[in-house]
Image (cartoon, rainbow, N blue to C red; front, side, top):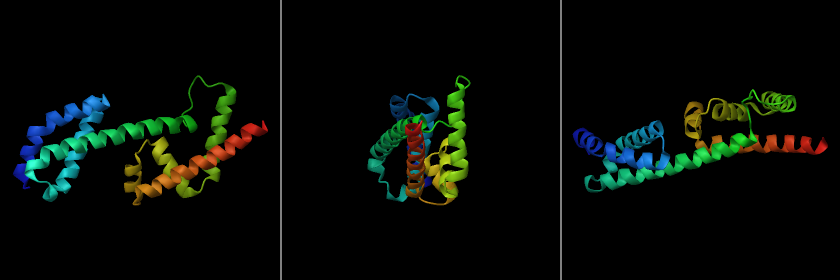
Length: 164
C-alpha cells in the first residue's frame, strides 16, 4: 500500500472508526487517540495490509485497542484502590499517616527498578507500553515489577494491619 492509498484509507475511514471507538470508550480524546494509534500501527505495517481487507482490519484493530484500553482502565482503577498515592484533603489523620508510611516504604524499601516502574505507572500515569518505551524494556518487564511492588506492599501493610 503506497502513501496515497493509505491517505485515502485514512480519509475515508477515520470518521467511522472514531464512531466505533467512541461507542466503546465514551470519551472524545480517548477515541481520537485510539484511531490515531491504530493508523500509526497500520502505517508501520502497511505493506502487510491488503486493500480489499483494510477497512475490516482497521475496524477490528480499533475494537481490539478499545477493549485493551477498557481493561487497562479497569485494572488501573483496581490498582489505585490498593495503592493510594494521592493524598485527599478529606483524609483523616490516621489515613494521612498511613499514606506517608506507604510512600516512605516505596521510597526506601522497594528495589530501585521496581520503585521507578511503579512511580512511572502510578505517579506519572504512564501506560505499561509508555513506561517500557521510556525505560527501553519490555512490557512484560514493567508488569513483573508492578506485580512485585504490589505484592511487597500488600505483604508489608497487610501484616502491619494484623499487628495493630
